[in-house]
Length: 326
Image 1 (cartoon, rainbow, N blue to C red):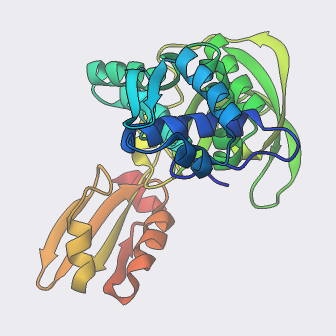
Image 2 (cartoon, rainbow, N blue to C red; image 1 turned 180 degrees about the horizontal axis):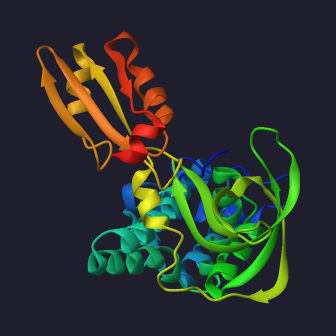
């Protein structure tokens, strides 16, 4: 399962109910009571496949977590207190994606708005009562981090702490292309999200001279401490933000090359509807649209354009030598 939603109950694990399954069910029960209060307790129990005894146990946990309700046979359910409302409509994966997106907004966009947005995002979990908060965080880790992004929760937690504490680390990494696995010593700087994939931006210290590189977090097999702490030069961030702006999808770089695509038919209207990249320029050429961008990896633009079939035609890609002198 890629993500857990609250549209349907999650079946229990054989023999003993899993904690993540119960958390998902509890949130689903709260949502069901909000949306369909005028139903019988028996119907609610049947919907989630639980006994009357289990219903009362779940009710106690929900009450402790800030969702209190009462039930009368002739009127159904009535909510007395609801502290879970702010997180009711989002799937688990939606919440984690939102937190990463808000963190990115804080760093690259309007600072004040970003800071407020990040605070709201953290309240998605942090505003809940203990122990519900801790259990929901564990649910994030297992059902979102691991199943949604293919990243082991302990590795993601290790990377976050290492970045926060400026710790040099060692990672066992599977490289794309030849798919070899070897240990790398790095200074981690940023975790970021692109195309629903987590990446780590870091400085390699096992190369001479050190290089700034991107590592796909799902390819990190193991992590270790080196016992070394490093310090950043405020003026040396590896060009992270500039390189991010140069990426069309995933590939970042300090140099850019111009790509021009001609769109015709329905594709030209679709492409003109939105901003695909900060550098894009749109020009009308008769019944066609010329789309040009300056990006680090032109082939990402070419692959993106292929989805439009015959209505997309590659006009030109700037040569590397020309780009360096422009």
